[in-house]
Length: 188
Image 1 (cartoon, rainbow, N blue to C red):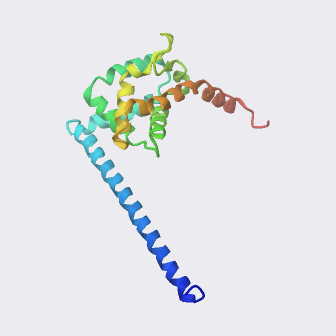
Image 2: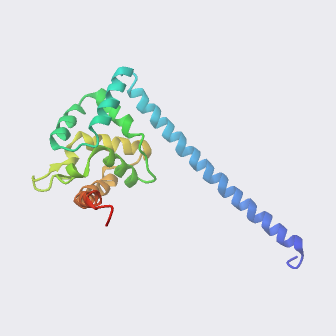
Image 3: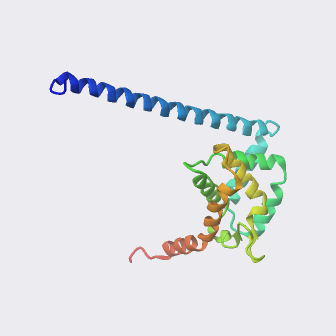
């Protein structure tokens, strides 16, 4: 049958069938992930049931005015405010809007929204010999982990810690790059 034109057609149909099966499997995987996200999103919404629309609006204004944080005093003050369940829930919902294709991406996107490069220079995951602020002991770390788990249920602290460490480690470099870009004359 190899020399016959229908032999090529039959092989092509078999290949198409395999490809269609793979596509269907991928679609089912995507649908399952979307269903998990929807379930997690609904659980976040359930936490917000007792929060008024005025509180939500006030939080949005507060978030847009203050984030990313630029000073350690702000950082410490809002860390204390995160002890309030309503504020914590609003923060979790807000940060859940920023996803990513991996745990590292989600973590990085959240840190970009929370902290400026200026303040990130003074923070490390563990506090570095008491000279820097310890991120792992803050409410920010807790909410970040909760948000990552919205997207990746099985995520643990050990999954997010490398991305957090990298974020803080490279903050001075990002700041230098930003300052350089802002100070370069357009005529150069």
